[in-house]
Length: 165
Image (tube, rainbow, N blue to C red):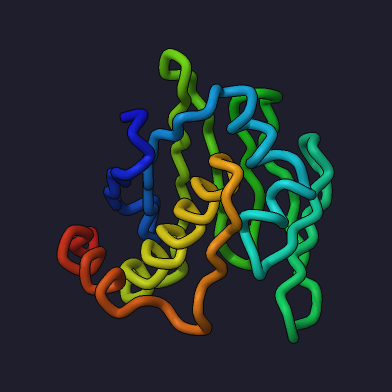
């Protein structure tokens, strides 16, 4: 899974809400990938145009700064240094887990989705973010997304992620 080109996507119900799970390999070591997903400055570089400030500890504050919107706030729910971080974002929970894979690493992203009909759009949005993370780790300029999601990517996820029953 170290190629960095394949995203494995699945969904299941977590209570009454869909839980989206995306896994992608990166050709960076686990320590490098961890810094990219746990350091506020690094996250803000690859998650553009969103900027994120987080206190890297359980109970820490998370601040989301999106252009043209008032700040939103969340809380760090889980922090296992070097491995896992989970936080609230509006009504959702986002969890990033880093696992070594030889000289490379795998990132597993799990997020609850407010409503089943948002599942494909949410997956397409994270697809863009994971692509931007790949650019960042490769030392390339981060390709910031257009205002709207690529309809072909949304349709791709609509086809492979059936709304959980």
